Length: 459
Ligand SMILES: Nc1nc2c(ncn2[C@@H]2O[C@H](COP(=O)(O)OP(=O)(O)OP(=O)(O)O)[C@@H](O)[C@H]2O)c(=O)[nH]1
Ligand SMILES: [Mg+2]
Image (cartoon, rainbow, N blue to C red; front, top):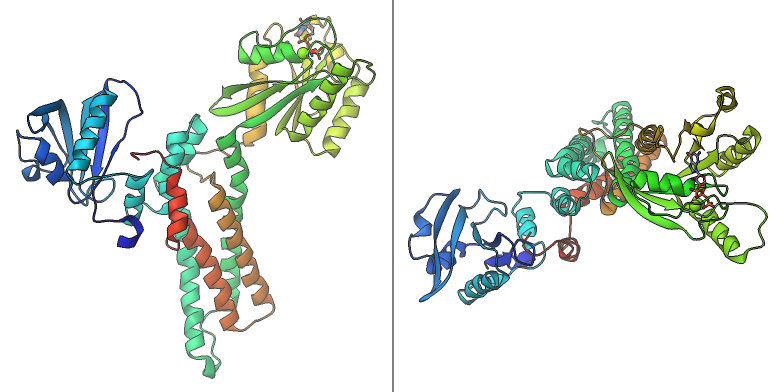
């Protein structure tokens, strides 16, 4: 283990953000943590205090008082890193924090690298690699959905899925390996029909995880929503309404919006990147408008969700044409029939009755815009988010899981072709290898360095 982290040394870092605050926390981890802080803490012998206790006192470097602080003690192995850890809560002056860190370094500590505390937690078996990565995701989370997904992984939800896959595969692998030991005698310990069923089950669990990545991406990066339609349909009015501010210029002159406007909103814990676009019409001689229309068409192609806004007073034929095209292009879309406030009698609304994915609103008067928001969320989640289910948000996990799926497929094909046990064993080892890569049982120093370098210092 030593070669991976330097190990014998004690690391120190400021764990709170840079800048002035009420308090700031300096964190140390390693077998000299107590000795180092004891040197600055004259009022008590910290090494003789119990773990998980707090102590108030002055930190002094010789005669120089650094600050009056609270120290929290965590003795190995019951700490975040699994080593002796001390957290010093000091007054929130960056100058004081710097002085404390420098004093610790003078006394033998080393400045921690980004993520090094969590890296040590991983190396000491406190967390597996997937859980450690979720710590960074949790710190970066900015919506309820990303927070929920990261917490689920930190608490071991994903790791439990992987362990289950691995354990079941291992049991079978052991039988196959046993067969190889008795290869002269042509025996089959591992019942191939049972194995086939097992692989089917494993495939379905793996595929579920792999396909959750689409949603994971949405949770991590947000959903891009293109608001499109003909000039004057009310796209900019809708953008303003959803944002609850007058962001885009609205007017009754067709072709008001020339360029795309992007803004972010959070609906039910999911980030939506709304893109208001220039109204699309077939005939225009204005070159700026044409360029805007080009851009709108481009945004439609890139969007995760398209809101097609139209004036409810329009004929249904045109909407159907758009709908057909959208289905052909495989777009995820909602039809937004706007300006229902201007409808005299109900019948004109009924002409749209047979259309799916339609919402009737008045952007100007905030009628049913809440329903539209709900539908936007439904379109994206397809009711898939439950706190108990694992959602893959990490590209590294996704690629490893795809490799697992691929090798499971190879095993199945091998069984179909009745290939010999030694070849089967190879495919099984390959699946186990990729499962182990996710949790960090199989890894290398470069990969770990890369993963932890993306963390903040002090975590
Ligand atoms: N009665 C009514 N008028 C609306 C509604 N929504 C928008 N309008 C009006 O429709 C006109 C066009 O609105 P915009 O939001 O600028 O339309 P747009 O789709 O962005 O138009 P372009 O930018 O030109 O493509 C404005 O006069 C709005 O006040 C609505 O729900 N009801
Ligand atoms: Mg507009």
